[in-house]
Image 1 (cartoon, helix red, strand yellow):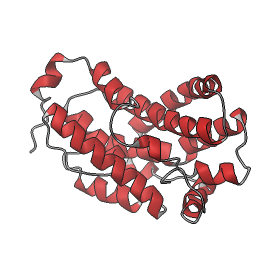
Image 2 (tube, helix red, strand yellow):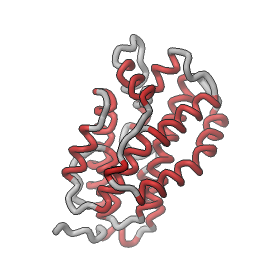
Image 3 (spheres, helix red, strand yellow):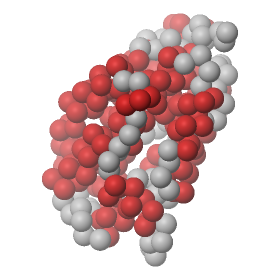
Image 4 (tube, one colour):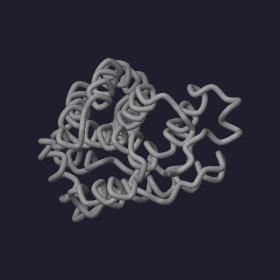
Length: 221
């Protein structure tokens, strides 16, 4: 049985501080280089303003990777062995760019977090790496889920601000609008099982596939 006691440094730090650092734009996971397919739909003229961007991200949270990744994070948090969940998370990526997105961010998160907090954290898909790290450091699951989802949404908002473009204030309005939804999905994911995995954000999945062929790209997904 693995040792899940928190690392010595974490014992003297409030969980909120650790989570705030993990999901800060300054944490070196490279999230700024991924748009999750948004770049394609903006070029197609399907997302053109604040309301359209908010609706797009809301669908991702409710029906797409937001909800699925939160369930995977919660399952990993409770698991003794994260390896099967790491394999599942990788297999669920619907396109090569989305696979790159979760694996590259997960690898970067694992390397940094292992080095800073002194835990054994191999490279895994991003939500699995976060769930495992939270368990090893004895962090509370619900806030981890909530801030993970909020960070996911905020990154796509940031991409939309640059791509559409939108003003920074409009971007923050979207982030604030989505905060209650992030909290609700976090509560749902905390109580979910792997049988609840699944999504229906087909437009986002297709956008991620089509982005691979986009002639001019600022983002890696």
